[in-house]
Image (cartoon, rainbow, N blue to C red; front, side, top):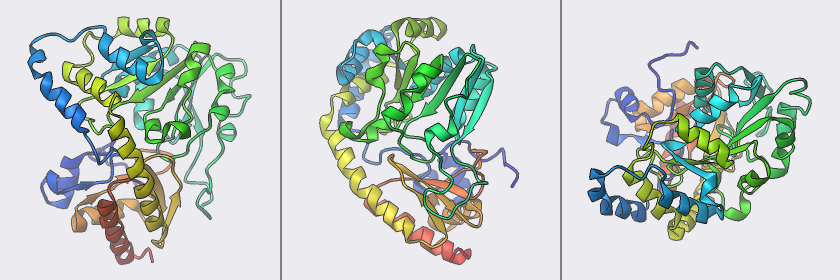
Length: 374
């Protein structure tokens, strides 16, 4: 299928979905964007409201209070932290450094902004296939390689190279162990790990490399604060890396990248242990419910996930499935045609509340039967 440039490249495009469904955007039930359905937390809203008067002043260009809050959250010195206008802004500066190397190894399929950011600086991208549409699909984990199969230890012989990957991996939901990633810190000149979905795991379940940053000056961790706390419109993320590297990034970028309200919300959210616990409790139950429900629908092949979303393989086209779900149920799923390694026979769905998940499952079952999946 030829890629339609009018289609959204990201999830969460409710205006486009409403145009297909023939309804207003607020009628769309969005499973395409992997955002926490419990948020935004009241603590963030209260912080935003209490700082409205501060909009008449410029933000602190050093974001000291926000960096202190992030540092306390991770038990790090604030010197190792740089807030940004979403993790996407910080990906830009990481890509600028990766582009200075001979090559950047990218685990694919991958979030589309990785290639966009790398190509903006003319980086040489070496795609390492974790999952491809040409691989067999006889069981749930078919075609999904181990990390060291996708990126062999001899891959960078004779060159200075970088590695960009995310953990948990988007779109498969695979969680790579810390032990799997550590050897690459010796192999690559620069390792950038996007941990945008890591906070959906309880602390004891995470495989973050944040506690390794002080020992590896070639390691950069990117984190998002908008997915877990359900504030993507506010744009807030942060990087953890050696202070010298972050000082370069600060010099490169525009001043005041984070607005006053985002900074205030970030400080409050990181202290909100009640909301964090509510989210982990919700996800444990709702993810299991959605997994079991998707498994029960004939014609779908489901990939287990450690994150708040699932990748699903289907026949026939997921584009037809997406269209029919929008037109008949006003439900939006994330097609995967923007992932070149996947194409039109895969889709991704976020985990939402149990009632919303049930609505998706009912809609999918009906549409799959109508289009002949059964």
